[in-house]
Image (cartoon, rainbow, N blue to C red; front, side):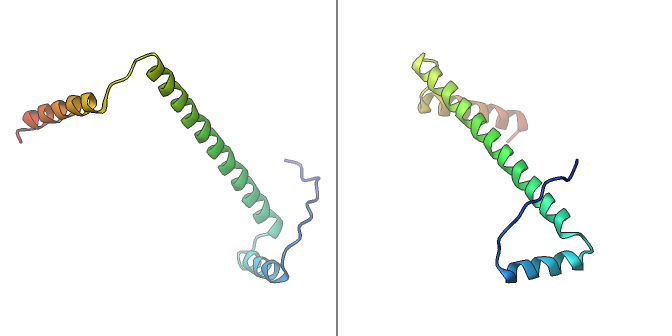
Length: 94
């Protein structure tokens, strides 16, 4: 990746000094650490956006299923899974 762009940043002198001391203690260039932090921020944001899109899709599909009448009541689901739990317990010998 070509490093041809300069990024100017305003921050408190104390934060800059602490950051520079931390990067020097690790023998790493401050610019490298900043690039890593920026990449991680971008990656985290992309993951969050992908997750939000995934959840929104699930909600929309569930709403469509409800509108089409393809759903079960809480009581029906609970009864079905109670029966499944009982069957598993019987198989396990409990």
